[in-house]
Length: 204
Image 1: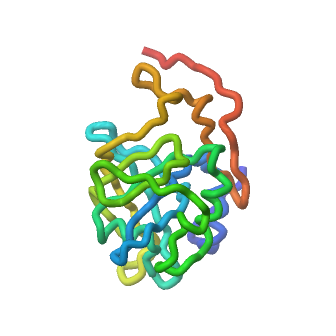
Image 2: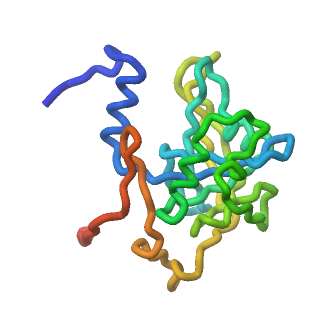
């Protein structure tokens, strides 16, 4: 087995090992609202659950070179809210379009031809194409990595204040994974569908 010291190689090499090893990764499609009222959207695969009490999720937004915040992190901090959508097969192509590097005054939602859906609790709209979306209030925004002057990322922890779930997916408080048809991120330009599932009973 190969032993690799992460301090002996580049950030890019460590990145390749991480995204090639930690797979599949769920994708958060995040919408935020700029101070000028522009609806920003972008997909993030450094994403997961934090806790259920209260329900919280975390999205890590990598910074641009020089420690410059991306629109998503800057907007989430400004408004104190954002919407997380679960990526699925139905709109993955449009979601991919939003990964383009657009200036802050242009809306990725409009460019991708997605439909704006008003939120109930927060000012940030979501998109109607997603079959699950979560309105989130920003609990914490933590600059991490890099150094004090130039962090590598912003860890956004959001408290879910409203779930929106398509009726066809929801039964007795549970989500039907097969019906959702989620997509996940692999390395490079590769994605994965749900694929084969299996059950193992947890020991007492």
